Length: 526
Image 1 (tube, rainbow, N blue to C red):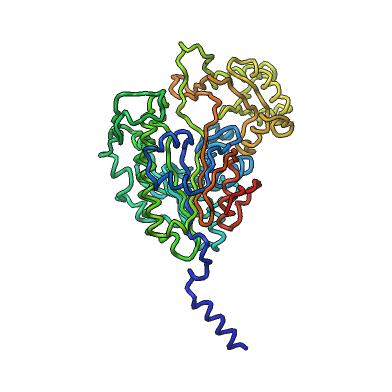
Image 2 (tube, rainbow, N blue to C red):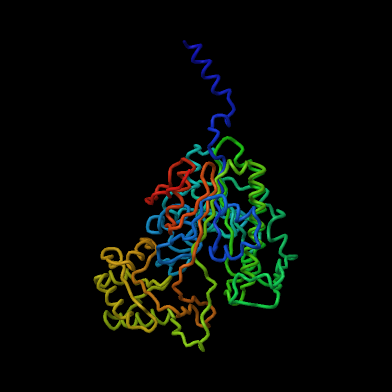
């Protein structure tokens, strides 16, 4: 009997590891997040795209053109967290890329973590602020830590959020050096990528980079009301201290991200080791140099066309190494667009300028008149005002009463549409507006007073007026696409919530959803 058992045991360990995985199980997950990708622009530019890029996903995968982000503040970091965790900021802890620390009274990146040094960078980041698991985490866990997970993106937050807590490494391009860098929070930095002479880094390519249109100017017709008859030429001068940041708003950064991702797939043998592996890739379609569609309409169209070519190369690599039928590929957008500019005054559309520093100064004077001298207001961030809770406690005042008095004062300020207090949002949430604010609430970083500004107004953050935010309440069409084995091509006509993306991908992979997911996966035809 013992000999029989021994022979059975030996037969198991003699079988190659790959043979222990079922034939129809995916070998590689490719999660692609594209900052500010719009469905309407994507379809308008289809005539200039190949059959092997975006069209490969559109024609052969699950496609939805309307992904809803139902929380108040959306940026690349917040959107990435919702996509990969499958839950809202209230649960995942990521409510903004930059947050206000009421203790130090300074803003810092939400992923800032001085406990972990940068690898080839001064930036010190980790995924600690992310309070729940991600798709990448679940891929790692299902393989008992043996699956390889990498994340590559132009910016740190995009790479780290997608990589999750236990990725092998998350890599991004440093704003100062133009090199690929990571953080010591991760244990497996690919030496070829963080090397100072890695060929696919801006540091070695920016001096010869010149962005010009890839097509004749009259071919850029997807945005017909923003015509421009002259071509553009963009270079990146050495004397410009922000040239790498500017470079990261061009399609050339997407090409370098693609090259680095292809190198990782090949060098790490992703999808070829008998364990489920994952690579997360971040791209950008944000307006050039943080400008507007009025300024850079042709550049935006050219960026879409060039990214399509990069996706074609990426998908070819996956097909030639792992096999496209052995991979699950999904593409998502971050669900917002920064390229809308303020209308000129001669159009007579209601507008104005809101100065946060003036508002909190006036509020502080009002509270001093009520409660005595002191610095009653600490700061302002993301339409939230932070009161001095320590002073309120020392004066033995009721915090909720001070909040209510503050809200009553602020509601009369020009440019403010509505005001909500923290206790109203958390304890007396009774309508769609307050419910939405609650979904974006963070117990650690949210303020005491929430203000809503009138559409058409601009927030002016500095005295010289150089830093502005235009208020426009327009939701954009954001796509979700997924290509997976044994999943039939299909179009989802109804809008979907961003939180259903992670559980849908997990269902196709036959693994657990991230632990913060409460939304059911999409009902797709297999």
